[in-house]
Length: 383
Image (tube, rainbow, N blue to C red; front, side):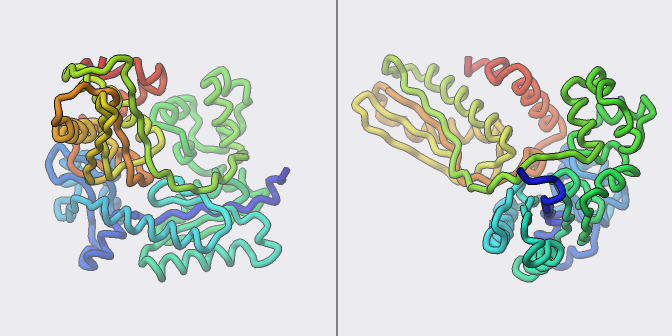
């Protein structure tokens, strides 16, 4: 078993990824306050440039407020096709260069360089990779080298944009100590507010609270938070494998032509796979509907769509495909749904046209499903 002192983990983050891609496509945007997202008053900011952040703008902020804070900001709707292309390009660069890496999102990577310090030097290697990504993709990056994923993630956020840092083994607690508790991954607004009410403003104060007290206060999450505050993280770098698809299908006990039942099954299955997609922080760019008739003939129809994982888009497309596919009016034996062209990404980054209300609704629905099970809450038509 490797000791913490022997581990060398580099976290690489593509700086303001969506904005950087838009600047490559349109150099006139460089140095300007840029907002990525829906242009309507009810839209939200999916991403913004550092120039826009100076005005207090941040991701998930209502676009109406962002425009009020910075009236001269340039609003770009966003293009998931381009973001996917650049994400795959950087993934290929990393894959060709390093022995083991984890792609944690569309624009973040953890790289395990354990053992490389004996032969080449982890800091030198990380510097060279940063330069290679810039040269071959044009995208700026920030990185941090540390003994575990937690420290490397937090440190990367501290040196953005276009920064680099190494936190030597043994310096984890001193690095975290002066930071706000809100800087710890996994600390949401409610937990941060609770800690601030207790007078716990910095990670140093948090790390000094007895673990038993943290357990009584937050249960298992209290233990995890105490470990993070003390710089402890044994989470391994999970080797990256491109998942090809997410799907589900249902073979009926009795062949049916009941169109209402078929539609309800399609809704139920699409919601099921959509929830799985969001749980894995993925987006899909292609939907396929599958039908098998009672004579065992099987037909499929698929459609390429802008990358998404929102149910209202997935359901609309699935229903349209089913309507085009079900032409023979024969008894149906099986129905299935499959999402392909998967890329890493959470719901927030796909909200170029959605409203703040829609964001909150999806977050609330998924929170309930994660807590009580996906069957606890579903559309009435899918019951």
